[in-house]
Length: 403
Image 1: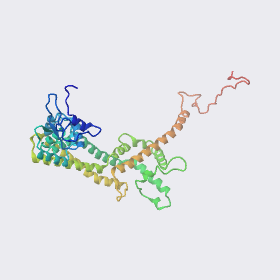
Image 2: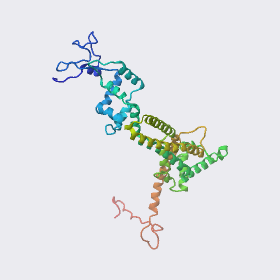
Image 3: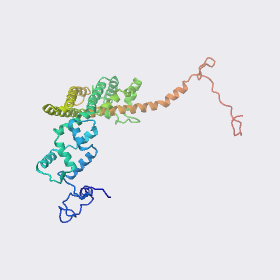
Image 4: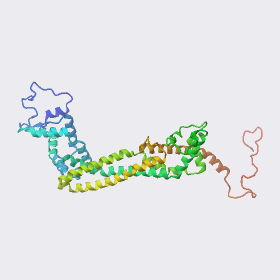
């Protein structure tokens, strides 16, 4: 261990499992020197490291700084938002570890009130915090940096949510296949409810779609199985088209992943953030951030345009709910609405697959008995009225086959 010098007091304070034992004097070590000092190989004493952050916060900053470049490069990168020095992951760490208001007040008070002695320096987390506070509008710079880095993915996700929901709504309202399914469902429901007021309905609540899979028949299957069988006999192959790529089922399953009310709130929050950043940049006119200011203006314009499409979605969704006779006093979120349709289409697919499986053995038999040979036999098609040729009977007492 010759030639290795480190601060043993700090090491024990940070990583010891048990409280460090001290003598009666809390201000001196075993050799009578002030705490924080440790002798170097040449006999000189190291500077005392002053602290003002709590231990948990210090550990957080230690972990973050271990993943960053040296402090001088780090602080300069924050000042000019240098993407070559800090990647998106590093910027996310900076955003997550920004000082809170209380911490900033503590740090500014320490800078103002504490005068460091000749052999005193700020410890690394405190030194980083003090120098970060010296960067003009450091919080706005770091948050803007993170905002611009994540803009493309966030904007794309919100635009896809609106596009998926609009496409699914348009398909449901214009689909002839959905219209056929709902028409048969209404007809069957009126027949089952014949003789009652409910038997003369000209529509039904959309919640009925979920109940079709729950109503069991006296024998095998459900009411949905019956409806699917009827539609398949009436329009063979039509229901299978529901599940083609980009068709009704696929579109509804994409739309159910989005909750448009949450997406709308997130969009409003993004616009508010961007406007607050732009306000600060316009008032300060930082030359080193001129390019970021222009980029922010472009992004803000994109958000305004997306907001227009979101604003048009509200009336469009209300009209869609009205089209399907949903109770206006019990509004459903978009993920619930499209989730109900997705569940209904899943039930239709299961019923259709079960129907196709039942048909396979019968179809195989029809292929066997309807097969035709390449030629004719005495002018008669094979299998029409030819006598059945049987093998000769076996002789009595012989264990083998016929001779």
